[in-house]
Image (cartoon, rainbow, N blue to C red; front, side):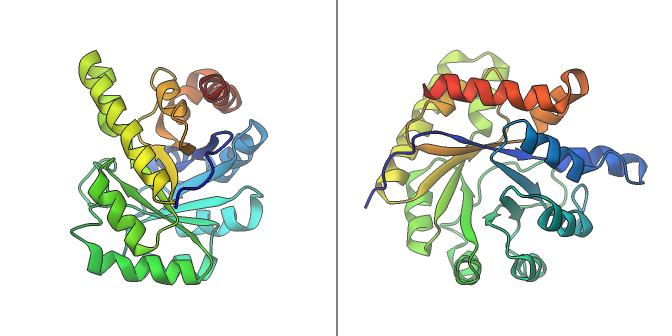
Amino acid sequence: MSRPLPSSVRLGVNIDHVATIRNARGGAHPDPVRAARQASESGADGITAHLREDRRHITDSDIDRLMAEIDLPLNLEMAATPEMLEIALRHKPHAVCLVPEKREERTTEGGLDVAAGHNHIAPYVRQLGEAGCRVSLFIEPDPVQIAVAEAMGAAVVELHTGAYCEAALEGDAAKQQRLLERMIEASQIAHERGLEVHAGHGLTYDTVKPIAAIAEIAELNIGHFLIGEAIFRGLRESVETMRGLILEARS
């Protein structure tokens, strides 16, 4: 059964790459928790952080501090592993987004294949849900993946926008339009199945508005681009500008 259409789009700001810069040299600066505070003051609706197996950016102590010091909901991105499950069950963040993770990749390269990995992933969805976490699955905009996510009992699907954004960077307008139409169709299917629809990966000022305009999408999670823009414009202005574009698209 489909849910009411969301009246607006929330913006989740991913602070991973503040920690990437910090870890490049070591020490305490720049502080991702300070970035989370600034994002909150600039109109963010939530904070996203990906605790990776190799701790290449966000660390366990960052998660401890985010849970203790930030008022906004925390969306913890993690792989479906026993170690990460234990951490999530200890902290019980507002939301947990299960994502694919390969040690050698620079960033997440695609959606989680929940159809092929059903037997492995389903117990994580169940245990996290029973602990009170809002469980999201980061998947490709594909009807089969959406159907399996619903069958698993996930509350949310986050649709991977990476291919759409890459087509924009390549200047392939026809491909970009095809991928946008795929996003629209997948959002409609997920909404009709009663899932809350989120989207993210690679979104910029130039690509966000067509995605934000999709009526079924309730939340966008954006990080790398905003942290990059913050070098030139400051984090507050970067987040405020993105929030403004999202509001324009939805209005």
